[in-house]
Image (cartoon, rainbow, N blue to C red):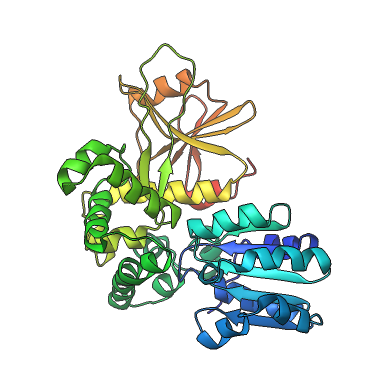
Length: 383
């Protein structure tokens, strides 16, 4: 089954108007599949997978190779972070051959971002491919519960058998720790970062406290922060910053942490089926992570934060664009209720609209102009 990705239109548009288009994202998220959907739209395409030595060898003298293939409309280069010196070659070539396009794929490495920022400024457009978002798979009649349990990696969610899905995610985690991090150039202890990753799974949706993690792991806080930054840079976790406003209240100023994919979260928590998930004490924070990730990826032109005061006023998400401020509370209950802290918080931030997102069947008014929405219907709003 091939599901059309939401960013396909944006990728095609960027290929039209700029020399180099990058698709970045975690391994196994579907970048290669997306590139193969684009290939038939061009008369002549050269596809190079730099994990294959034969393809990598073709670029020993990359400048000469590209000059010998000037009849090509689109060069597609997969896993480009394996040849970082290619970026400077691309810069001079695209400046001299403005009709030729490059589609480069990378597994979200800091090295990839740094190199392209330095050498391809003004010549490249980035597209981030995340695991499937719910609106992408909803037309395929994949149940929300399956998506919640298995996450959005194609090889996980498209596997109907829960056991096979869990085994795939286990293998993904092992490969990421033992192979991918080394390939990305990170020299660190896979055992330590695995322990940290499991700890973070238990802290999903909570405020980050580096000192507490440092004591538990027996390493200094700077190293903990470095490891968390690596997980963030490789798209495994999301760091959500607090919303700072000029109010006379003591605010929580540390970021919150969320897993970007609930399937990976559940694998680290050893949750293997939906019955185990629903009865698990982490069910609520897991649902919160799923909602946060889908909303942030759907409404990309909004700034996203959380809000919390020392006194207990709290909002799970605050969306800001210009003078508009949207307050969002996330509940896993079929009959959601909010606390006094929610009402105080929407007053604090002067929210222009407020919502509760819950696994309900349809939207309905709550009170005081607050609306309750199911996730899929909220994602379809024209905010």
